[in-house]
Picture 1 (cartoon, rainbow, N blue to C red):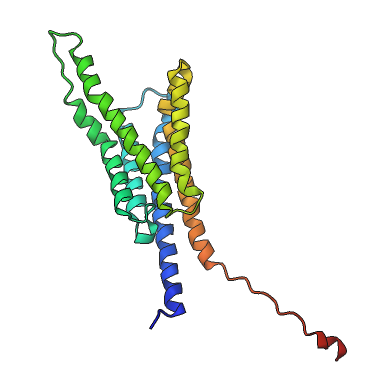
Picture 2: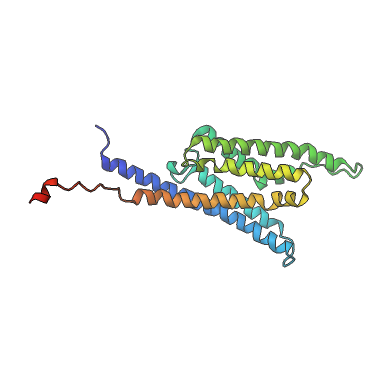
Length: 231
């Protein structure tokens, strides 16, 4: 025997609630991770406060990592932005781990500091971190593309991470071309801005996921009986 209509409706309601929980909480963490960094950077540039302590950036990075993990794993299978597809999910989780503060902090301990060789630290840094940044970029590209292809998020919004990455590449290319002010904006502000926008989008989609389920179905009014005019 097939499932009853009520059972199917209950399952849809559970899925909608899972999307709301996941996308609202994960999106809020992304927004907060940006707000931890951007206001302090603006106040510092305005000369109102001193430079931010290192822990501020780490807090923002950890909030971002937790938010992304919640979005990709999902508070309920339906909430996963990858639909918990194995390849997409593993790639996104791997990207979060590799791009985390813990990974870069550990790699920094491997940089050599030889007093006898003035170029030892620079050469060691290049040998370690240039491949690391390439790896982070490749994983980020594959993760963003996987989220779009999974289509667990409604179209066209499932392609928002890919769009954010393309914007970062465009600004970064112009910055490397010699526009130093734009290069600073790309490094400091652009990642936080795109993260905040993706977080806001996740929150809106999470709220809409339940709102669409709770909206009553449209009903068509029956046509009046043509005989009523003769009664």
